[in-house]
Length: 181
Ligand code: NI
Image (cartoon, rainbow, N blue to C red; front, side, top):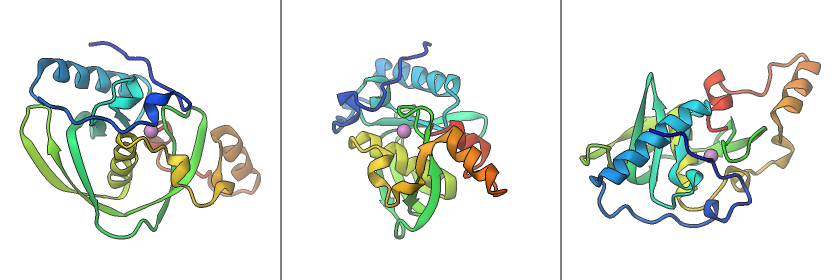
């Protein structure tokens, strides 16, 4: 296992469409997923997509309770309009946060780390994480999903501004702050 270098916004690998994984059972893929999991946990992220570690393949991982789940060649279907506002960060855009509208609920399918087909539904925070990570596989970063750029800034400044207004900080649950950071 190894901690991988994370690509930051501006690197072309984050703007390309990632390729389908031909053989999800390939030991190299298994190793990559293990390294992605370790990298995500080390960086205190909620999710991480392979292009973020300079590997343009259709794979992402996310925190699933105390463990890490992975989806290879994922397909995502939004079960409703993207009308849920929430704060997101991204490990490829460190220090910033933005408010993004996402669907509350999604259906997903793909291949798990064991090479088996999986499918299911997710809602709320997990649905948001999946939409964010899936976007990475199509070269889309969250700022381009934003509709109100007044709700975009450095986490430090947003937190300070919120405190000054005696309002709760513009933050999702603690995990998410670092999370899709
Ligand atoms: Ni991200």
